[in-house]
Structure formats: structure tokens, C-alpha cells
Image 1 (tube, one colour):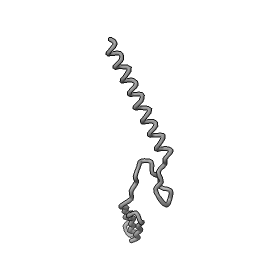
Image 2: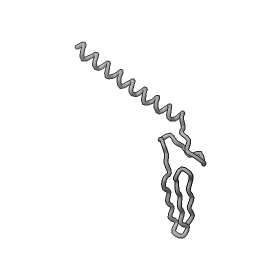
Image 3: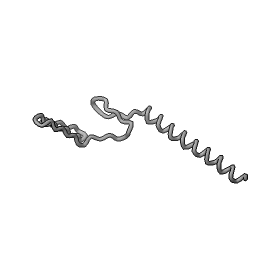
Image 4: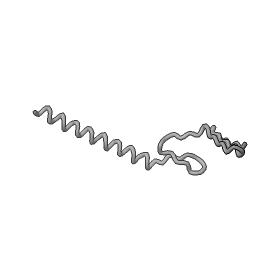
Length: 75
């Protein structure tokens, strides 16, 4: 059996006779984390773009709601 472990607690084991592969303890903090071959890095640009998209969508929803409320109160 081949066994590999890292300082962050990740363990990868491979059994050549059966082809069984297991990996435990591999952690990814955000949906924007990318493996660079040595460690996880957060893609800050992609994360900021997604946050801006969500903020824009919320502002748009708020604007629509305010417009609808203004139409109701003026009727």
C-alpha cells in the first residue's frame, strides 16, 4: 500500500493490487479555492466577481420591490 499524508491532515492511500484509492481529510474552504499543485489558493478575483453579481441582483430585486410598492400606494 502506498500512503501519503500532508501536514494539514490530508491522507491519500493507494492499494496497487486492487486499484483501491482513498482520500480523506482534503479540505477546501470556499467554492473559489483552486489547487496549485502544492496548496489550495483562493481565487479572489472570481470571489469578488460573484459577490458583485449577488449585490447587483439584490439591488435590482430591491428596486423592483420599491417600484411595485410605489405603484400600490399611489393607486
